[in-house]
Amino acid sequence: MFTIGDFAAFGQVSARMLRHYDALGLLRPAVVDELTGYRFYSADQFSRLNRIMALKDLGFSLQQVGEIVDAKLSAEELRGMLRLRQAQLEDDLARSTARLAGVEARLRLIEREGHMPTDDVVLKHIAATRVAELSAISPSYDGEDIGPVLQPLFGQLFERLGAAGVAPSGSPVAYYEDADNDTIRVHAAVPVGAGEAIDLEFLELPALAQAATIVHKGDMMEADRSMQTLARWIEDNGYRSQGYAREVTLQFDRDTPANWVHEFQIPISKRN
Image (tube, rainbow, N blue to C red):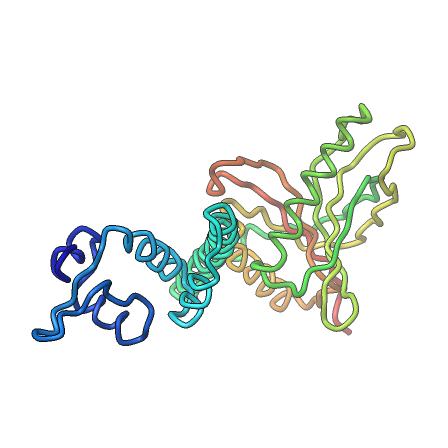
């Protein structure tokens, strides 16, 4: 038997926490001295303590922890539950990290207000091009929603093209359309020649008679900087935008987004 202090030390928790768990009925002492009220624990109780701490650290409430522990799940069942919860927390962390990066990018954009020259904007005619593409629905045009939809689409697209022996004839293009209920249809497209019939949709991406374009260097989390430069140029030069920008990938680095290079192409027309 161990005193509450010794059990706490071996279990790497505080005695105060053990008293709290006792009060909740989550981890009762093995023995309580009737005269002194001292609590004593057995080595067998480390098994329950370990489960409590693992579940608590994974974000379960103490009520949920009690229910799970009392269900006497096997180690394999518990491991499966913990792995699922771990995956959920990792996804939450990735989203929080992306959200924080977005906030930092927005703050940098605010700091540059009034210092965003439009000299890099180029007016172009974009020719029609034959592409193979895959598409899917994103909940919104927000970068947090677009990225997780677009990236797997390009992965699948290049995998299918490679399996069919079809070589891209130009740079990848992402483009967007409004869908139902404020959602966005995301298109991942790659220019191709007169390729073989494969499990992909082939279509002609229409020409853009006039497009305001800018080359964006760096992470797409910083895309607002270039997009707002385009917006300023469009307004200053008497144009109006005609839909979402096309995003042409000129350089891609899987490990270092800071090395990415994209060209944004926004279809425009003269204001009346």
